[in-house]
Image (cartoon, rainbow, N blue to C red):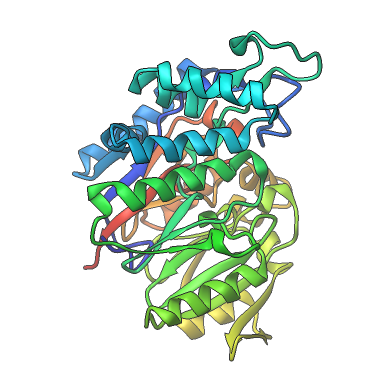
Length: 383
């Protein structure tokens, strides 16, 4: 499997339909679990399924991550790995509590075990009392954003080192899958969890032999240098361009402000990129790039076409960027999925001749992630 460019023809993707883990969100844990509101699950499932149905109509293979877990969970060593992930994340490490949780996990059938891995465990589930918290194991409501826990650089699968505690278990689940599922049997992979700095897939955008990586709320420069060294060790040659974003929640990843529509056409948030700084790596050091963002793109890719989120309007650009207008998923060159709610940006897509599917988004958007966030491309076909 290979992803050379994020606007090549989409072929195979990894995704996760939101489940009961979304219904474990409460006003008291929303911020810690990185949501701004509590989505209505039935409507969120409907919206997500519209996207999956559209992908399937384009002859794109969609793989549900829980199916991959189910495929390998009968292997005792694999199940023990998942149990260790759960035990590591327990909020109580008392021996009696740990043993009780282990006993419960071993009693579950595979379906129940996978649900527990994702939906979490309450203190009440274990007949324990805690007046300050509901969960002894937090749920994973962000699992629907499959772009972040791992990413592809050409034919190399990279396991992310997640920045926030609420999401660390996600990338370790991905690691177990990549190590043990036959789908990845011949896949080269890099594990970024063997170094202390964070890097997430939403900050990594493949543009041929050039990789854009956001330095953001979630990705640190030291991790980018570590990744660069690991790629060189695998004899993978690529140029890395780093984009240092303003540190704010609305710009949490590079793909919240910039995604490709084709090899020369992009959608971007002008306000974010005008405040950003650009670097390249030379001899394991950062070297500043003094060009504007548009100048940089023109130098790298020839004459480019840029679509500004919200048409650059001071109010609507902020509203539509917040609702992931720049977070589009390329199906093929000049063919994207976007959120229906961003009407000004979508009108610009229409005027630019872009084919777009405006998927429903009233509930999914509450998690601050769009179509690009929800889909992890495993294979794209170059034209």
